[in-house]
Picture 1 (cartoon, rainbow, N blue to C red):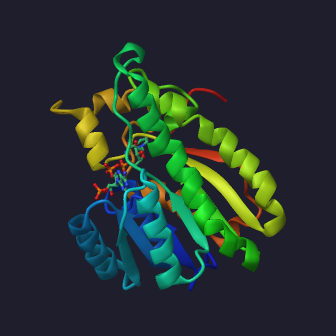
Picture 2 (picture 1 turned 90 degrees about the vertical axis):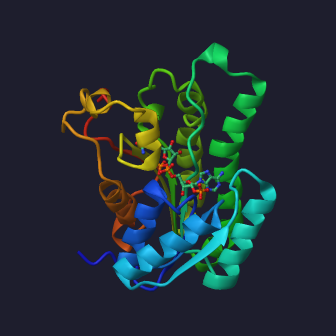
Picture 3 (picture 1 turned 30 degrees about the vertical axis):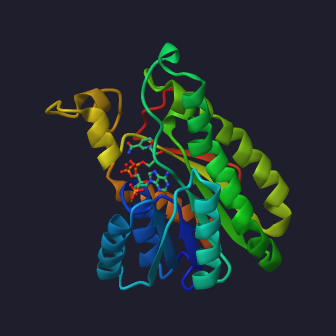
Length: 253
Ligand SMILES: NC(=O)c1ccc[n+]([C@@H]2O[C@H](COP(=O)([O-])OP(=O)(O)OC[C@H]3O[C@@H](n4cnc5c(N)ncnc54)[C@H](OP(=O)(O)O)[C@@H]3O)[C@@H](O)[C@H]2O)c1
């Protein structure tokens, strides 16, 4: 299937590793010129070189912390300078700390809000004017399966990320008239550095796979395929959804 986005320009947040890098790679494979970002220039240089080698695509990078206003402004300014209009925006960040309710003070809740919601809102604001002017845009937020079925011991993620359900649906209503789609993709357990950290030194993946009907964790490129489709011209009539890529882990219908 030709996804119809060759020559489009994409900004992918938190994308030197893991899910963000996998999405950047798939988009580059489709002929999209991409800009990746994260806090660490060494990670970014290595990701740029890996993606260019794998795809032959054009990859720019910018250093920026998505939790800081100055970092976000730097990211948006660099994207405008290198890409012009951002046609496709994929929001992402690192995950908040694990822990139960009584382990987190007010500061931890504030940090989770900045990491997961404020970063998403402010980056969308920065990329939106160009999409509205050209009457075409794709916005995809990366969140978690935890927003449809809470994961024990991840109360910050379960609570703060759930706000994205309301954000994405409401924004899709507001931006539909501009031919901009807004969707949310919910990763299940996917083999990245983050999951390796959560897994600790256990020698197998059983904790993560026992409730997954497909019986395994995902590979990042399986997640990235779903995001890339939603970023495509072919997904032109899909907006306002929250799509799990979880191997069937969420039990609700
Ligand atoms: N993997 C899973 O199984 C899974 C499941 C559900 C939800 N998620 C969520 O999906 C998101 C991505 O997860 P992942 O598995 O891809 O994590 P990862 O492998 O740890 O990669 C995180 C990426 O985000 C960048 N990053 C982290 N904090 C940042 C910040 N403040 N500003 C800019 N860049 C930042 C990191 O780069 P630098 O270190 O260079 O900044 C890195 O490129 C996380 O929110 C995670 O909680 C993951």
